[in-house]
Length: 444
Picture 1 (cartoon, rainbow, N blue to C red):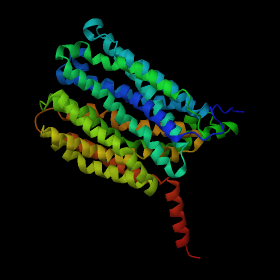
Picture 2: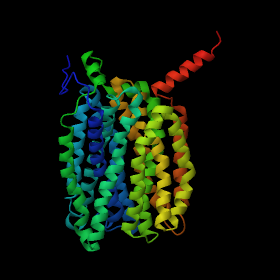
Picture 3: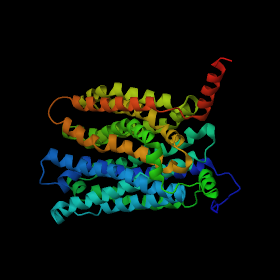
Picture 4: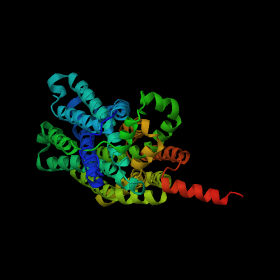
């Protein structure tokens, strides 16, 4: 029989402590992921693909960025199996360790001028390992809070891991911004860009220390005690929940597409096409991301009260309406207007992603929840995040506003809107209220 390894089996865990451990670990993992995206936008093209033209070099750098997204569903399958078979807690530790080591190693890779074609190949391998670790992180972190939280506050507590991307982005880009403004261009290109990757090692160690004593979730303990764990979780998910998997992946694609269009593509676009200073554009993006992170728990509370699905529908519709204004505002090259454009896009995105930490786990049964929720979440990353910087960079080539990028992002927003419309509501209180109303309205 499964043994309860909680440090205090008879004492309810502190939700604030659990949510904080979840947030900090997720922030560190997304720091690792985002620091690569910023480096890809700023320096990796010339350093690792110097035989390419400037545009082709940027596209190639963003191509290595996309490899991380392709690895994320594989990480979800691997770590989801661990989470559904052996517990959510081991996932939290192993995924953080893998991502941290891969990120530190990126900062040590010699450039093309030193080892030739081996440099971009090593970059691809390490980016793949980053994505593998991050693919497992989200499922473990979200289930840590979702399966401990009281029903009426599940959305709120599950929003803590959803703040992790904002915190990680601010850490990564704050360090990049500080280095790019204090170092000369030659120093930054030579060694300064490596410093944020090396810093990932210290961050990973601190995250492992914070997570060392987290309790296993009560739902997994109950599954293990009754021996109801899935033998092959991914096979069970594909066989019994394939439609749900495709719908959740399609629904979440817009959030990834919008986030990486704002945080990665717009940085390259503004600096290369509009002549905006690197530090100026980073500052614009960071202000928008900070406000997005601060609003996440507030939106999640609305999800606890009114339901997950209405907010997801509203967020995807808002994104569809804002993509052309985003392109127009970026095209002004005015810092205030560019910040407004980025903020509007991220507000639409956060209206959805603030509640998916509770929404996805509620869609899947506990025995395959770690695999199903994580694979669905990261499938959205492949559909919306992997190609967006590459496609947007190609569409924005040339003079004039990047209307093609606006059309591309609007199309993804509409696809996600349809997918959300086909998903059910899962908030227990809202579902019970709807069932009660239907019963009351039924003829006697």
